[in-house]
Amino acid sequence: MGRERTLAIIKPDAVKQRAMGPILQRYEEEGFRIVEMKLARLTKAEAETFYAVHRARPFFQSLISFMISGPVVVVLLEGERAVERHRTLMGATDPAKAAEGTLRKRYGKSIEENAVHGSDSEATAKDEIAFFFGAAAVSP
Ligand code: ATP
Ligand code: MG
Image (tube, rainbow, N blue to C red; front, side, top):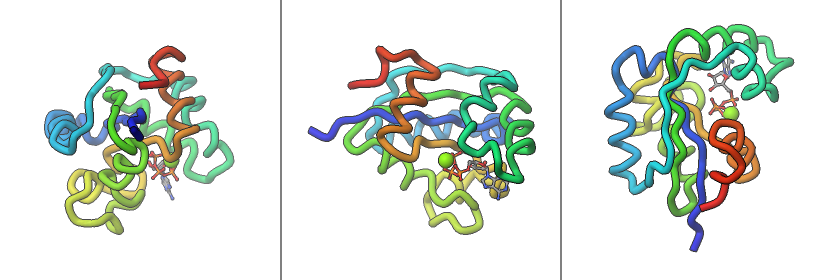
C-alpha cells in the first residue's frame, strides 16, 4: 500500500557536472524503482508549460533559460510515498539551506541551479508524469 509515482528531473547543471550517474544511483539506493527515463533537451515551449505556475515570478525567464541550457534527464520514479520521499531526498530549493545528505546540498550551486526537480504533490505528479510520459504512465 502507499505505492505511488513522482516525476524527477536531473537539471542541466547536474548533467553538466556529470552527476546524472550518482543521482540515479542514489534513487536506486533509496529504494525507488526507475519506471521510465529519458535524456532530453527541453524546448522553450516545453519548459514554459512545465513551469507555467511560476510565469509571473521575477525569476521565470531566467529559470526557462537555465532549463533549456543543456540536456536534462526526466525520470519517472515509483515507491512508497514517492512524492514526499523524493522531496525529502532533494532538500530545500536553496542548496545553502538544504539538509546534509540531500541532493541539492551535494550538487546544487544556487537557488536556481539546484540540480533536481521533484513533483511537489500527488496531483502535480500526475500532471507532470502525463506531460512527459503520457496518461497511461500516471498510476503504478
Ligand atoms: P522544483 O519545482 O524545480 O522541484 P521547488 O519546488 O523546490 O523546485 P519552486 O518554488 O517550485 O521550487 O521553484 C521552481 C524552480 O525555480 C526552483 O527549483 C529553482 O530552479 C527556481 N527558483 C525558485 N526560486 C528562485 C529564485 N528566487 N531565484 C531564481 N530561481 C528560483
Ligand atoms: Mg516546484
